[in-house]
Image (cartoon, rainbow, N blue to C red; front, top):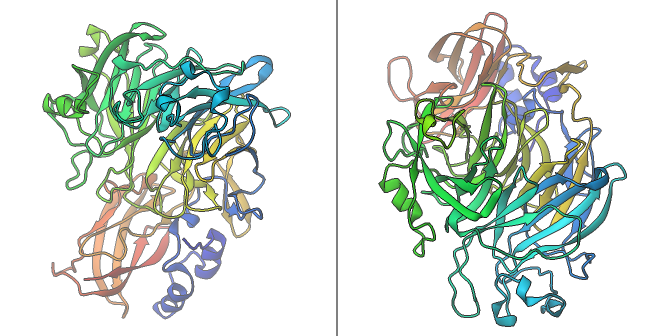
Length: 580
């Protein structure tokens, strides 16, 4: 994805309406085909190419690689590959304890060496699935102890072994990590155990493996992530299926998952068996608050992987590949929130972010009179803004940090409480996904993994400074969540046939019009959007919509057109292509 900086854009265009004679040169030489995101005035500024070719970050931010696949660990084993979900916990003496997943099956870079030559160093009773002593399941977790003051990794070791494809998970308020198997292997052949469960790993600095206990009453399905609501202790879960459900698990004993509980699935009140995926029709609109109820799930160990069919058949809502999930405080509504990603949601299937706000009486009979509420937070339907979100975390200042797992370049994407997106980091190594983003308890360090070849990075910088937007005369500080100036963004999809959406941002209340012109300068269509308040108009529910027709209602022919945004104090123009 090539880039054009905001500085270059403003210098080229003068930030005013161009004459049509200049448009051809401007679009041919700079704007058309370039990444519209780089001109968006949010985030920490331009990403600076990393001379080491690992990760591009904003100016002043730095990183170090603290762990690599194949490194020797303190228990004599090796760092496994396929780094994935991760969380940070407070340790003794101000240290940070990281627990990291490894998305291995029965193959991949092993903690036990290329030929499992180190397997004899491990007590076989501490392997969940030892593979009859010859081919153990190679997923699990490693624990890292890190000092943010000295920026040193003090120790690391294998903490859970013998599980399969530990993708994501989530932290608990009682200082443990729930790691999730995204695998439904049955006990057959060399596999001794049934897979598809969650496991709990306490945050500890003591080197050694935990006893693996499958949390069977949390359900057997294609697990991805969990989040715990600290007030109620209820655990929420995502299912990585194109027709998956969102679950909650009400514990029989608070803080003790192993003693069991009750599994339920989310239903939108008044919408029986709702399809939230928005693949064909915009069933769910952004920021549409919907009351929720919860349905009991039976036969939770599900030998046939059919919990999602049971729940949907009874009225539960269907989601598009639920993946990352994290608890946070929602700044817009001033309420606790469980954020989660649906990787293939939306008409373009590039992802959605949802927020569920629990009831003050969550998990009790009184929640019926004041139910929890669900809302679609963002659904950009624009891969330049967001593509295939996997892991999610909430920053200390309230922004979401999202890990992309798309088809090309991979970014860490920030999302403000108002839904503005910005690129914070880029994988400069390869096209492997980012995973496991999590902040240290002191807020100084963002840890993140590049899944392949398997690196864990510690990122530091001025997290709490005001956000900067680059202008021709230097840097102008602004604040998260405030749109300081208007901007016209690239339409999507582009090229298109027959319809497209035109996103924009308003720095002040204004009457907004979008004019569509032919290359000859003739007005083809005027879209009068009316008076709009300050804000972000990027999602399909808010962006300007053009159906590809002229003022006479006729479909326009294939070719290049220009669209101009007009307010009393702002003019900007970009190029679009109709292709039939």
